[in-house]
Length: 495
Image (cartoon, rainbow, N blue to C red; front, side, top):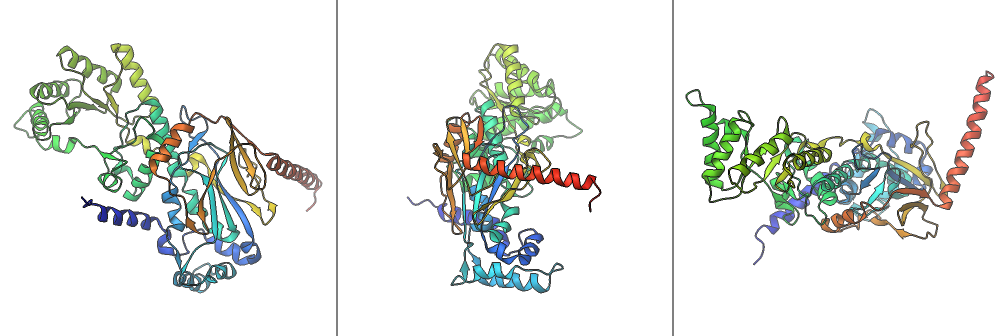
């Protein structure tokens, strides 16, 4: 039978990626200085060049060890490459920025090279290479390289720096999967917009699904409809329903019990909220009463999310055990992190002598912590112009760029950053993502998740290739000499 949901699902997926496309193809989706800079030096703007995206820092979380997981190609590349740019939009942008914007500048020669294509639908003549989805890499190693006319690549910088979000999310998912095979996502309300939630859910799947099948549960119903092969919705009783039974003419305990019982009677499964009055007394009694009152189902557990979470997990487990109730799922929340999960598990083992197989971490808030550019220091820098390697120096450690048209290889546990002109003894890790403005990368999310599982514990260090090392050493020597000479002139009072 045909899938009756397939047409709507296909239309919604297209709409989702359309929403990520560069504001309908308007050329203003970049920094103003791109216009002023490339209008000033048109021949440089048109010169063949390379830029790399580098995440300079790892996540400041236990177990990360400077490792990151690639994710987000589908959403991030859609910002510029999901559809062609329209000739009329480029011409309209040119007229606005040249004559009407407060900063009047437009790199005509650069965009005329795009307008020289035939037809109304135009592609950026840019190639993109990078790690495939799910590939583990190390902070400081370029993760994508962009090649083509330098001025056009430059326009991509703000959009491509946003890779920080899915990479962070995928890495967080990997860390959570290391702590527990059972994680949940309850963070839809934390997303600035729902599109963000969908982008990061996909990245989270890539980083954390693996062979254990975690990172699939979500409270985002749209995600399950769009990707039913990836996600399963999870929902239970909420505080708002529990509160609805309260009044001044009945006890709080009676109101809480009535709503718990009504929910279980109708739905048959629940993670009962026990903290509406007090999780360690009233809530404990009511939850156990409800569980015992419904012997027809074993799918009723509890949820704790305030106070001493580890102690409450032990309390509920031991009370159920004393009453002869087989182990039920105990969801624990309260800003759970991978390290927090491990501590709860360790405390449970120490106090009960049992494995915490019934404990289920609901980690909603964790997925949004530290999801910003500065966490990984995402940097998009020019590394070559024509046949000349380029480097951006810095007085801050770790901010010097790696010059050249770069590719990355694996040699055992080492990542080798090389120029594409070199022959390297190692496995090539970069794949072509965009070919002349068209996205050519199309791996499934399960394939990417399997790669994350496979590569997470593989790499411990990185090194430059012989040619890249030579370029770095020559540039560093030039810089050292010129800085020393300038210091001497300034000390002597030279202007």
